[in-house]
Image 1 (cartoon, rainbow, N blue to C red):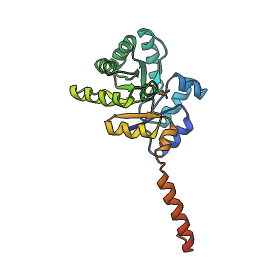
Image 2 (image 1 turned 180 degrees about the vertical axis):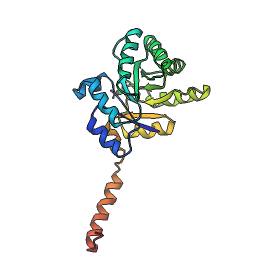
Image 3 (image 1 turned 30 degrees about the vertical axis):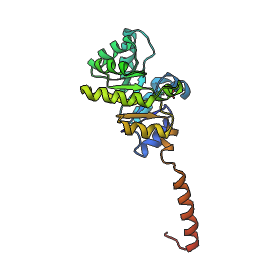
Image 4 (image 1 turned 90 degrees about the horizontal axis):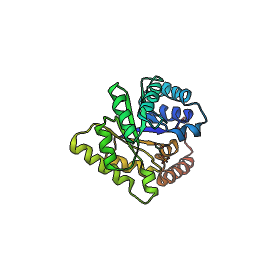
Amino acid sequence: MKFFVDSADVAAIAELNDLGMVDGVTTNPSIILKSGRDIIEVTREICAIVSGPVSAEVVATKADDMIAEGRKLATIAPNIAVKVPLTWDGLRACKVLTGEGKMVNVTLCFSVNQALIAAKAGATFISPFIGRLDDINLDGMELIADIRQVYDNYGFDTQILAASIRSANHVSQCALVGADVMTAPPAVIKALASHALTDKGLEQFEKDWAKTGQKIL
Ligand code: G3P
């Protein structure tokens, strides 16, 4: 499973990238707001660090305007994936932009049918939002598994990009049900190394080592 970082925090992305944890990056208007940065400038900085797909989202609602915004965003770097919302206008923009050879990430997906029509429109990535479904007492992970089955049934090559990931448990569940990609905030990716028994075991090893009086270096 590929790891994308759901953030526009350049320092956090660079740190994870140095550890080999970054296959791509996703952003959205809320993430850009949180960064306090100009969308073009910060996206260009991210693309200079990360060689995989970097999603930058359009904000227009009409297809022609989305296409124009998508073309502008795609000039930032060759690894830009234009992010469009799952509306008919968004799908029209998806069809046109992928026809021009650009990567397109169709976002705000909450149903199997939405994922199906995004694949038919040629989406490079489909972004189902797990956490936001869980928030309203629906099962986000079940949606990922259902989309996996439908895409496999018909051989769609649109990649399932599990989004709105809020916990380490979401990450392991995504890997188990076969998401192609998961995108998570840096704090969630960092939490993947944590285990109470690792901490406890390390503490014991440190105590016992001190008692040996030895040194390795
Ligand atoms: O990639 C989409 C993601 O950022 C949404 O996450 O936590 O705002 O639902 P969240």
